[in-house]
Image 1: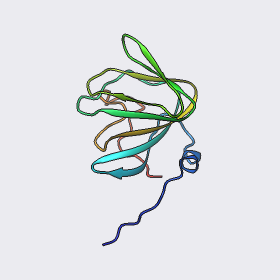
Image 2: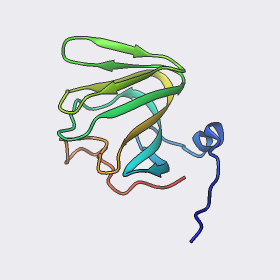
Image 3: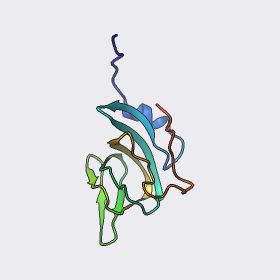
Image 4: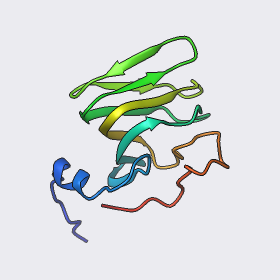
Length: 124
């Protein structure tokens, strides 16, 4: 069986996303998912017990807040949040972010009752 191989155009895919804090699946490999999301405002404080997360800024910027500091991530930069580390992304203006993480990762981590929790992600 031959799999369909196609390239992904990030600006085209981000143009399909009308909302914030609602990741979409853009690709999958080796049990990992490449997700695209738009950030704006402050997200919820949370952590992921079993998964590390990679955040790559495509456009805009955001602050990753930790309890003891914050790191600002700009276009062309990425940040890896290790499993178990409490964090909160905050985007003062809209940011386009690529996430790379295990398919089992839920966007709100340990906060399973948040209104922002997404378990069945749309595919772009």
